[in-house]
Amino acid sequence: MEVVQVLHMNGGVGETSYANNSFVQQKVITMTKPITEDAITKLYCSTYPEEIAIADLGCSSGPNTFFVVSELIKVVDSARRKISQKSPEYHVFLNDLPGNDFNTIFRSLSIFQNKLREQLEPGIGPCFFTGVPGSFYGRLFRKNCLHFVHSSYSLQWLSQVPQGLESNKGNIYMASTSPPNVLKAYYEQFQQDFSLFLKCRSEELVDGGRMVLTFLGRRNDDPSSKECCYIWELLAMALNDMVLEGVIEEEKLNSFNIPQYTPSPAEVKYEVEKEGSFSIDQLEVTEVNWNAYQNETDLSDAFKDGGYNVAKCMRAVAEPLLFSHFGEAIIDEVFRRYREIVADPMSKEKTEFINVIVSLKKA
Image 1 (spheres, rainbow, N blue to C red):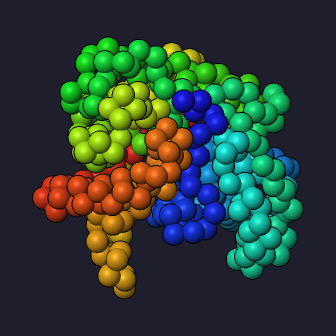
Image 2: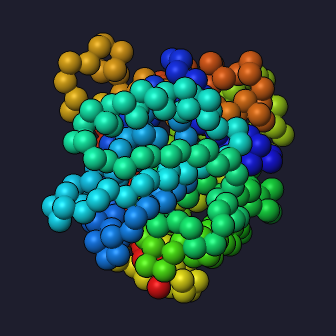
């Protein structure tokens, strides 16, 4: 699997699109706002730059893309008004892999810009937007050109499926039954990727530049613990059932592995300190329910079904990977079964995604 070519969220604005099934991610961004606002305020108030270059890495498409940007601009605009400072110009770089639906983003750009002007008082500086397709596990920008980097729910994705996973039979990710060498291969790929990410960003950020990074992660020291792997184990159950029924070839399943690693806070801290380009300002852990619509009111009957909500969310994320490996014919059936499978544990236990958030300053 060539991850750079096949990893992207479902595009467009249809029923199974990421744009319409990314409420979990929106909740996580909202929960992280105090950390993000603190970081961008410290950045701005330290030098009062005449222009601010912001990069959102792994921006995907849909409402969350502009939600992050608008919140950052609002914070800076509020800070500069308090001291009667002239507004900086904003240059926003939206980055994701080439398969991302950049067309949907830029079709809705004028709507976003008009809405932002309505929300802010006159005097805000111009905002320029640039799409930057490419992997963030490499250089994306010229040296010393960025002031602020944001990334949410992207850095858990690896640059490639780790090597040496042949013994991970029947699993599609790290699992309770995965051999130790599989866990080691995943961890080493994460170390290699995150270290390279930090090195590249340290070259692109100005001195004193800041980053706020949110990983899908875990609290537990065990990388195969339920809190980070269970959601994929349940999808593997659906696929294994289809193997038993002869719908999917066993060899096909055994050669499929998700290119993701969900780190602990300790692992994130270790890599940052080892790479050495950044100091840690904040490191926190939060959680959000698998079913983002839990506790929401005025929902249609469909959205009151937790299994339905989780299956839709996971389909928006995982369908391109499954489609690339297994083909289109199985997709609807896989997620029909997954909806039924995932509903059972959700009714009996606490099912949450763990988020690891780190705020960094270029040393």
